[in-house]
View 1 (cartoon, rainbow, N blue to C red):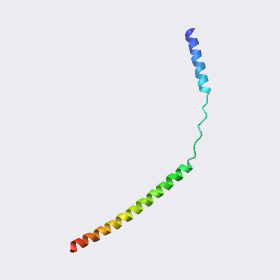
View 2: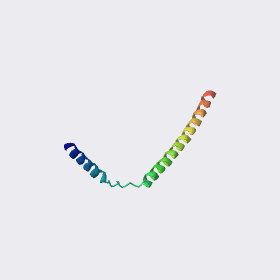
View 3: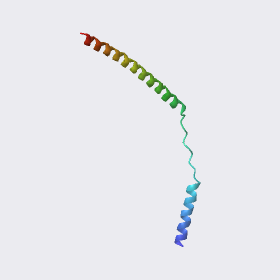
View 4: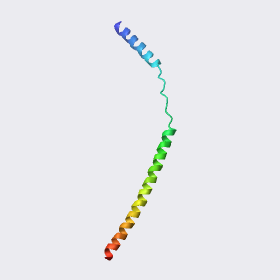
Length: 72
């Protein structure tokens, strides 16, 4: 008798727990974040290009200085 009462109580709790549905949380818009990442990537790419151009200028100046040092 105790086992059947316990089983009935557990079954009732399981049915009650399964019938509850959770409301999904609202999803934040992704588009603004994607645009921010896109802009950041574009800015980072431009910075890399500028750094490469500066390094090329500095390397050219170093070559010229080395040539002048060898001539003297």
